[in-house]
View 1 (cartoon, rainbow, N blue to C red):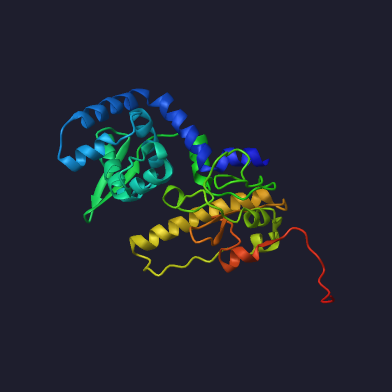
View 2: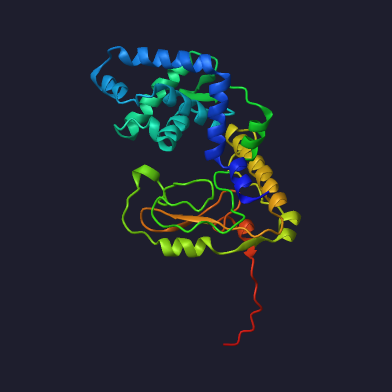
Length: 299
């Protein structure tokens, strides 16, 4: 598997585009009806603050609905808090950014999801006064499999592209991505240490396959085994384990590189989830320098 195929297969950016194409093809009538319903919903009169929020919705209503549905498919294959979806949508998609501040944007996204809930595309349930949402959209096996192994930040199999400005991206198939964590809330065009990021990105690493195959990351939970919190943590752990094993088997002894970003204070973070140079002791143990030198201790 080469780097471009790796990215197209695993990166949420590309999976999202393929999900949107699938939705437009298979759920055309539902999306058209939702667009009409949203247009009618916006045209009605409510209290002042709600009127202001609804008027700030992007004029491309089909795109708004499509982006919200896509994000729901991505992260709500099982029930997740409604607030999680709203927060993720308003952070990920600028076309759904309503421009009145994060609190109001989340409220408006919840309004749109309430409309979508009138269809069979999503399921919303209330447990202990908390609203949960789950996607009810059937996907082809190919997309299901990609969602299972999807990693927000897969390691690169080639040296990342050189970063030249604050919206550069080291990946081969993604043209723009904020190098400042927090995206639109923290982004700026002032000087950041691109030279440091490029140096770290160029560091060639590899897996210690002996550790990868003989040991595995320990599962820990502070909750009792009969609690929902424990079961959710266990489920997350099992999925992460499956993703790691997929990467391990694909990468083998291949050279890998990690991309890096900074937070608003300039601190550097390695971009990896299942594999990360700043991860647990286990994750640090199976990552090694690709080019090794014998250290003699002599100057």
